Length: 125
Image 1 (cartoon, rainbow, N blue to C red):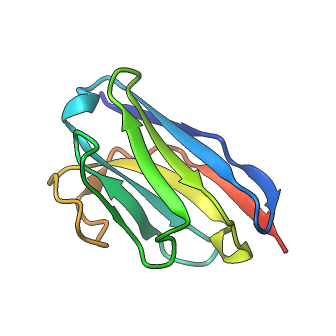
Image 2 (cartoon, rainbow, N blue to C red):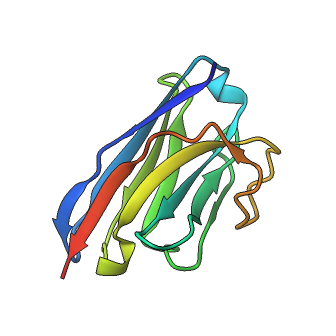
C-alpha cells in the first residue's frame, strides 16, 4: 500500500517562504510522476505543480509559476515544494499525490491518486 505523508506547513507572513515535503513509502517512488494540489476552505481542490519520475520535467499552475518550485529526491523517496513570495491567497491545505497516468502537463487532478493527509499553510497579510 502506497502511503504519502506531507510536512512543513505553518503560519507565515506575506512574502515569506516555506518548503513542504512529502515522504512516500510502500511503492516505487522513483517510477512515479508526482504532484501537489491545494484546497482552501469552501473551495475545490486545485492543481499546483507536478514533476515527472526523473525530475527532468515540471509543470505549474499559472497562479504559482515563478514563485513555487517542485523537486524530488529519488534516493530519499521524497517530494518537495519550495514556496517563495507567499501571498494570503496561497492559504490552503497542501496535498501530494501520485500521478497515475504519468502525464504531468495538465491541471486536471483526475489521475491523481494516493493523496496524503495534507499540511496546512496559512499566510497572513
